[in-house]
Length: 107
Picture 1 (tube, rainbow, N blue to C red):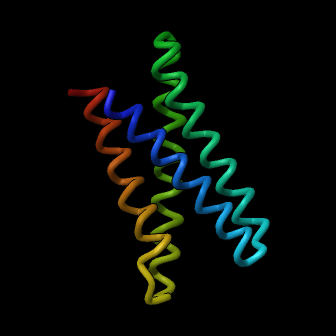
Picture 2 (cartoon, rainbow, N blue to C red):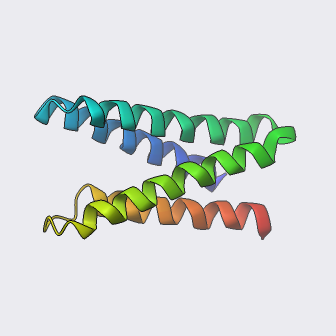
């Protein structure tokens, strides 16, 4: 239950961040990347909750997307931009998503 709520918040923040990046800076890449990432997160949690027969595939999709966002955030933070947002927030959220997913699958 908590994983579902957290993932819904996570994909909402990812999509909203992409929209803000597009509106403020005109970054079409930000909009496309956030839409794809948020869609994959939404699809993964939908499959995990609604179709338990596809739990492994859905969990794999969530893990893939979260690790991708985690690595991307680490790369953005390593540029030493001097700002925590937005890469630091995505880093924390992706880490929490992976921990919650691990708890759901293995605890």
